[in-house]
Image (cartoon, rainbow, N blue to C red; front, side, top):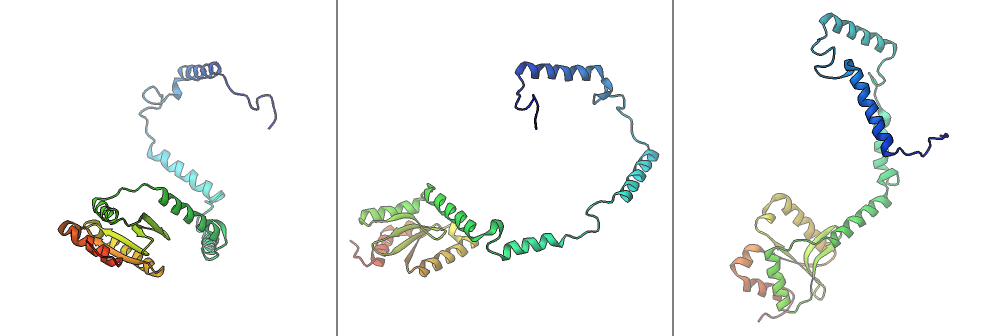
Length: 214
């Protein structure tokens, strides 16, 4: 596009003058104003006028029919199927999926998660026993509560309410299978056990990693 107006920005004064001109136009043309000031306000289309309008629309459709009437679009569904079946096509490529997966893992690692009270209790046991641990350890796309690298052990703390839900139970089974897949030792500590006998949980953890409790 060429011309003297290319790249031209209106000044505030120009905008103000243009707005005043629009307002003046509407004041001088009351028929164009909506609401009670409009000359056609309150008028309703008669049944005869509606029939005439509908007949005109039908005639226009006969001359120029609706583009998608009685038409099927098999090429769209085929294209979508090809995109899903072919791993190297479009947005569903293997490289893009890997990139999105890595981005999700990176965000999970940088996410500062709230530590529940039962997790804090297990953390106190590990600190008291001078056991080195890594909180929120990442395996594939799952985060585990504590990882003990010197003992190749993962500890999961299961809250009574949250881990009693069916969908969470299914997720716990998947996380257990992932642990076994990579040959990790997995120990699950229940919240109710920590409430009922805190010292027994301490002995369970120490015995599980092959140590001797005090």
